Length: 488
Image (cartoon, rainbow, N blue to C red; front, side, top):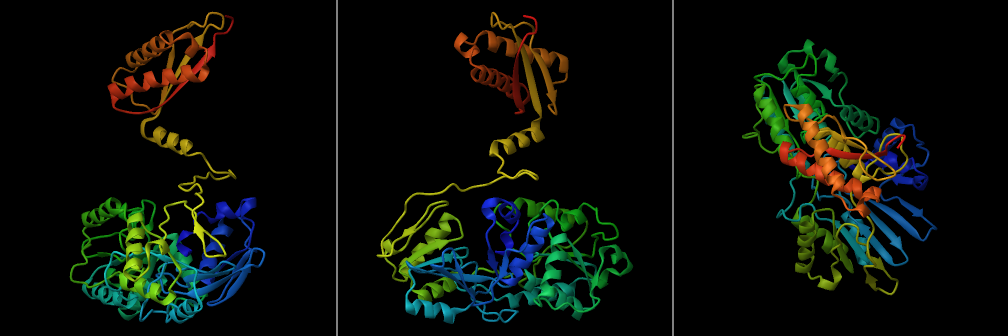
C-alpha cells in the first residue's frame, strides 16, 4: 500500500529484506523515493500492470493484480493462485460508479474467479458499520466548489498527500476560480511530482507557486494545499498555524477546509488544530458547503457485493478493529455463510490451509510496534523508547552508593545526582532526603539481597521511586549505581 511505506527502508536495508518487491507504478514510485532518501538500492523494484501476474517463491504461487478503486491511484486486490486454491485479498477498496480516473474495481474478474472457485477471501472491514454504499469521490467537488465560491481570502485545504484524486479536484477548481496553488508539506511536493510524471495528475502550466512567492499574490488569488489533516505537529499546516511559514499567514477572511476523515485516536490533535486556526480568525466550519470528503473504503452493501461475487469457501474479514471484523463476519453469515466458513483472526494469529480442504490455526507470530534507530540495523527494545519518554517528561535521578567490599556496609553517605528532574524548592535538602531513603533501603535489605547486584538495585529503585512519587508526583528514571569503595 502506498500509505504504508514509511517502514520499508528498515526492512529493505536488512539482509532478510533483500528480495524482489512487486507493485503498481504509483506505489513503487513512492517506495523508490523513500529508498533513495536512505541511500538504498532500488534495483529490486518491479512494476506490475493491472491484471498482471507474477510467479513468486519456487513458482508454485502466482500473484495476480486486480485493480480496485480507492483514495490513492493504482490500488489493487491480489489473487494468489496456489496449490491450495485461489486466495483473494481485497486490499482497501470501494465500488465507485464514477471514479475520477476512470479506473473501476475489477468486479468482472473477481466474479470470474468466483465462478471458477475461490478457497479464501480476505476482505476490507473498515466501513462494515456504514449502511448502504460509500459516496463517489466525485461528490467532493460540490463541497470544495462551495468553499471556493464563499471564501474571499486565502483558502487552505488539508488532506492526505496520497489522495491524488482529491488533489486533482482542488487543482481543477483552482484553475476555474483563477487561484494559484501553493503546496505546503514535503510529501505533497513529492507525491504530486510523482503523480504528474506517471500521468495520474493533470497539472495546468504555471498554476503552482512557490511558498516563498505567496506574498506577491492577493489573498483571493491563492489556495494552499497543506499536509496535516490529522493534526500532526510537524506538518505543513501545523507550522503555518505556529506562524513559522514566512509570507503566508492565516488571517480573518481565510478558510480552512479539512478534506479528510478523522482517524480514530486523532480527534484531540485535530480539535487543537481547528482551535488554532479559529484563534487566527479563519473559518473552519464546513456547514453549508456540502461534502468535502468521501471515504476510500466500501460500505456495507459494497462488502456484500464482493462476497456475493467471489463466493469463497472461507471468509476472513481483515483491516479493522476486532469489532469491525466481527461485524463483517456477521454480514457474511447473513449472506448464507455458515460459522465454520468464517474465520476471525486477531493480530498475529495464523490460518493454515491444506490441499484436502482442511484448515486450522497453528498459533501466532509476534506483532506490535517495532522501534528502529537511525544507524542501527536491528530493532530497538521497547524499554529503551519507554526510558526516553520518561527522561523527556520527568528526567533522571542517579543514586550512587559506595560499599566496603570486605564488610558489605556503606562506606559513605549515598550521593544523589539528577538531570532534568525538578526537585522541591530546596534542592540540597531534598537530595539529603533521597540519600537517607537510599541508605535506609540498603541497610535494611537482607544480606542475600545485598549480595545480589540486580536485587539490591531493584530494592533501591523501588524505595526511591516511592518517595519521589509521593513528594513530587513525578516518575523520573531512577538509576542506582553501586561501587566498591577504593582502598577499602
